[in-house]
Image (cartoon, rainbow, N blue to C red):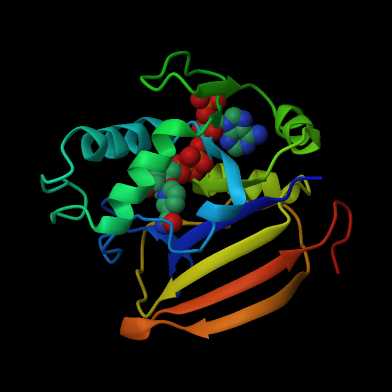
Length: 197
Ligand SMILES: NC(=O)c1ccc[n+]([C@@H]2O[C@H](COP(=O)([O-])OP(=O)(O)OC[C@H]3O[C@@H](n4cnc5c(N)ncnc54)[C@H](OP(=O)(O)O)[C@@H]3O)[C@@H](O)[C@H]2O)c1
């Protein structure tokens, strides 16, 4: 079965974004989890999809121009992700969104459609976010691996990754790596549905 792998950039206090609605401590939104070679589909929540599509469309269209979230020009890794994203199916969990700019975007209305996607043949699937969607996918036992990049910062307010989690779930620490600028990469395996040790 294909694995569903979540990759998130967090402050040390578990925030995906600060109180003003962005994670301004993140310098680039490229795939820094090493996932690109092993995936051929992306999953994300309807809350983040419009902003995500806007961000990567801007880089696809004008790769030399500064982008509004980071304020700088896209990095080479962001340009690589923008190209990869344009060719890769994206499955968006939403009961309200109905249209997307990208022809390979599909809307899914329930978690069972993601469970079915995992049963299809193919490479692994990248769960891009956001907070609510990731917490509910983990609660439903659909996420196999969590790749976190933890920034050396206490954000205080803002949106926490696990704010809406409803179940206790044991994790298996698979890899720890020190990254530049005080960041840490943590990879956890997540047990099958029902295993909550
Ligand atoms: N730091 C990072 O690495 C990182 C990564 C990704 C995103 N983010 C941030 O995360 C934020 C978005 O997170 P979010 O929590 O607001 O939204 P989200 O997780 O992207 O989407 C939540 C939405 O998904 C839909 N949904 C449908 N069924 C659902 C279910 N069973 N469980 C959960 N959601 C369901 C609902 O939209 P409908 O009402 O349309 O059904 C719900 O409002 C963005 O601001 C983004 O910047 C940060």
